[in-house]
Length: 575
Image 1 (tube, one colour):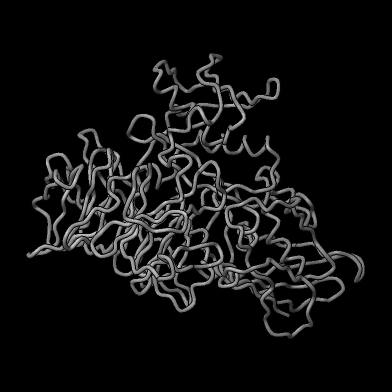
Image 2 (cartoon, helix red, strand yellow):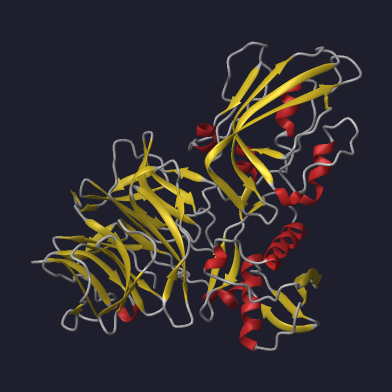
């Protein structure tokens, strides 16, 4: 007898999350047990599921492969419900929990009353680590395990597992359904700036356990990827506990070394407030002294994504910047000087501090990047290649632009090239995160993201890149959907628009894109405080030189009165 859960089913966008765990006769063909949830990153909103042994050998093993989900402190207790002794030792938490997709369960051999052998084959697609991070595999490995089951009574008695797996595993679809995004925050190489570090936490923990777990992860420091662009202001070897006084959480730190610098104490407070989501008030003490208090709102500006972004975007049509807002398009704005900006050959625009413009236009000898605060004061940047793309304003008073396939740093004040970055040689598109510490880009038809940092000399440095959406091909463009998710335009089967977590643990397929092939995408990132949907608004895409706004139900053509808008090069402005 076999049952199967495919990776495709686990990643597909569906309208319902329907479980079917009923028995099927021995010898039946494999069947898809259920589809994946669509509320990626959100709490399930349900009472925590419990999984226990049953009178069916195959269902017992399937439940065992779901039971690891939950509070890590009681993981072995949940798994021991399935064992004969009730006191087995499982693999160490430091080795992580393997995530299994494409699961097939086969029952064979043994005595149907007293013993059974259940063989599980699957693909190991990643590992959920004890610090809440997920390490997905670019090439899933094969998994096969035979479980020996037994029972002492008759057909109405439940099975117990006699042999234990070498490493604890979890059904990947169960992970998708029951874990939510819970980023940690670490200090960037700039004052009053935090960088998120994506982690995942079981969605149905009580509030006290949830906070305790996230605080423990925070004290361990950044992940390997985040460490390339951030660090913790909290000293190593620090310990902590959380108490409550008059209903207000009090986080008590015992520091690994003294911290007297007020700016460091502020950074520590910001890290704790953001990581624990302390919107309703808190007190932070270090070695008995209060070093921070208030609410998350008091530390809101430490996140580079502004609060209350207006649902406004911009695009080019007939070499002119147009504004899209409230389902209307215009070239006139009393608030934004760049609306209506025109230049011969204008191809792309980015808006920086003080409404400065970085514009790429086609010239007689190739593309030209011009920079300046107004139309009359703009000047050309020398030393660049002839094929330019995707200018991006970096918070560290710099512009990034793709120059002949290489991401290149430009000084907007001197209008001179500073340096090429050490990532990418044939880049066709890129998008800078709001914090300026992650750069997403397209190269070779694939999406990538690299950490960035500013060194002691003020130079931008790129870290080791990571491919995003490892099963998405023919990628044309990317944009930040939230601080931890990317919009990716590409192809996977019949789907062409995706939101992908930057650790690749989740891919959300955008509905309603049949027949549309997208060349460009731009988006406001989701508010990291207010939104749990990992998508901001608006999202604009281009297909066949026609502009669409992407809703949760699918793309809708942007119109100017009764006419479809033929725009290109959409962009947003984070201010």
